[in-house]
Image 1 (cartoon, rainbow, N blue to C red):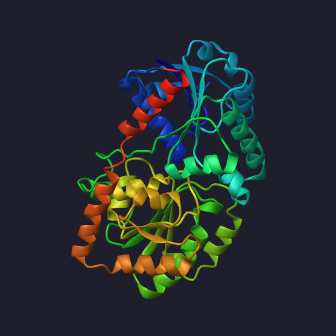
Image 2: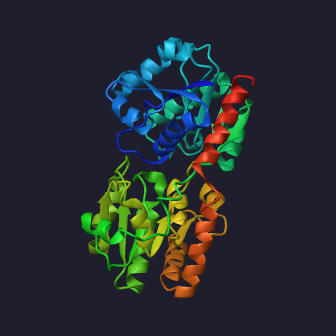
Image 3: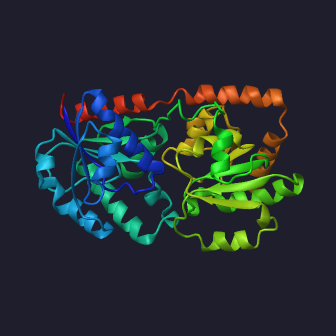
Amino acid sequence: MRVTLDVSAVPPRITGAGRYVAEIARRLPDSGVSTTLVTRRDDGARWRELSPSSAVASPVAQSRLGRLAYERWMLGRSRWARDAEVWHGPHYTVPHNASVPRVVTIHDLTFFTNPEWHERAKVIYFRRAIAYSIRHAKVAVCVSEYSARQLTEVTGAALPIVVAPLGVDLSRFSRDEDGDEERFATANLSRTTPYVLFVGTAEPRKGLDVLLRAFTEVAHADPLVELWIGGLVGWGVSDLETQLRAHPFASRVRRLGFVDDAALPALYRRASVVAYPSRAEGFGLPVLEALACGAAVVTSASTVMAEVAGDAASLVAAGDSDGLANAVLSALVAPTAARERNARRARERAEVFTWDACVAAHVRAYDLARGA
């Protein structure tokens, strides 16, 4: 089977949905899929290194506007589309004017359900793009049962949907602390300070405002614990910056910026608590990665994160800062034996999710799209 995978939207610093695309691209050739990766003009070398068994084509314009225009009007008629049996758009969109069967991944429906969480231009673009994709794609891939239900409920999509939960590298994200001391020293991080960890791009839906309010209570109760915030700065953060400057325990809030792949598992392993109070996600990969490391996780009830975590995390209503503070404090004072039991349960839950299973679900979607 010949599949062309559009990876042109993945930024140089890979997070979230970009991690999903990278892992699929890396593994598809080993699943018997002849894979061509379509990249931006300046990005081919990265993808050749990441997926050496894939063919790489780099025709896409480097600017966002140029990339979107090229995808819409040119890619569908390109030789990379003509030579493929299936085209996969892994980030909501598919090219227009294509005769090749198309598969599209829909991560979440928040552009429809909560447009206030996104920049207005993105809401307009992605609503139109998703509407086009579900009309013209043969199959949709959703990364969770939660998103699959929403896709049908919100858009009335009638096309087949294949659910392909994301995975985690269980060898890298593990409970093995060997080398963590060195990683912390290299990153200039304290190896003795207890900390609550958040990892994710700062934007309105992530719940960082809730976490900062909760941390006021946590810091009052615990004179040593700090809040470490890892991740890129997204959009709509002016209120968050004001909240940070005025925070009564601002000196105990540490902003780590983007966390590279080498340091991330160590940060999860050594965290006293991993807090992920996002209001909504398509999957919530940081929750799974933290569970794989045996971390004590607190995340949002009635969201996809609850679906991912099962009974291996503490669940709090999204937006409930008091509930979040209480859950974090409970985790901080849990006895050693209880923490060990919870760590084992977290790891067992994470082992349900593998990238190989995710790729296998994609192969089923491609087979369905080409009528096999």
